[in-house]
Amino acid sequence: MTLSPFAHFDRYLAGEKQASEHTRRAYGDDLARLAALAKDRDLATLQPTDIRGFVRQLAAQGLSAASIARALSAWRTFYRIMKRDLGWGASPATGIRPPKRAPRLPAAMTVDAVAGLLDNLPDDTPLACRDKAMFELAYSSGLRVSELAGLPLAALDLEHGLARVTGKGNKTRVVPLGRVAAEAIRRWLLQRARLAQPGETHVFVGKTGRGLTTRAIEARLATWRQRLGIAERLYPHKLRHSCATHLLQSTHDLRAVQELLGHAHLATTQVYTHLDYQALAQAYDQFHPRAKRQEDGK
Image (cartoon, rainbow, N blue to C red; front, side, top):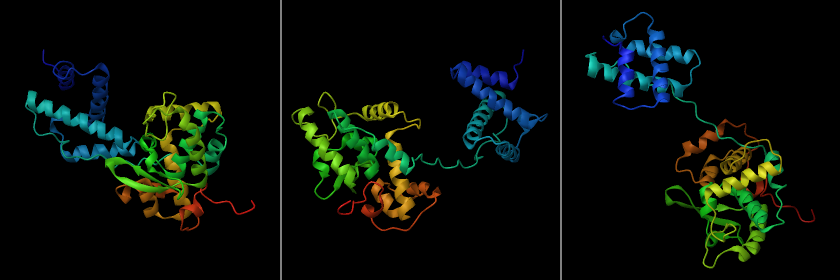
């Protein structure tokens, strides 16, 4: 008994490829889409113009770019096996590109939401004091969670309100520290001296006296979210995004934010330009919500 092309392809997936049941169902769904779009036409006779038309139809139906890309990949694999095993011609899906994916916009908190988190973090225990310093720093200076975890004591210059950060690609940059963050770090360093193991160089250490992992930092923020009754999903990178978002809303200075975040290319920073910008500004201390210096007597 001769198998249908789809059955032959499923046998290939199950046998030669040893694909999981989930993978086989996903391929089956994508091939069912192809058959529905082709209607009564023989799949072996389809041309690249047909596939391009199918892609347009799927996009018009509201299918995401990612789903269309997955379907095209499945179709290309299907036609490759049909050519190899059944003698079909060249794949009509080769070289067909899916629609461009819309850039994933970074999730940012509002200024009030950030204040609601950071202002309500206590510092009445050593670990709470540490957490407050960590998250103030993440928001103040736009640090990645890996940069928080890896920050050494020698990188801090609290006198001048600066920190030297080592980011992706082992590249270093100097970032400013907001007044609130610098004060929180000073308080934490007094507590750290009692916890840190001899010779430990990381700024942020745990109960064991050793440096924190990125997962430990993420878990601490999740714990505070729960304790403070915050409904919004929180993770350290969201504080970094919020820092960039709030600075851009005030300064409209992409280059400055690029330097702060340590982006190698300006295009990476430009994802934040979906925001509505406020007044043009010039300096970090003047505009960052938690870096503004209080006027004397206030």
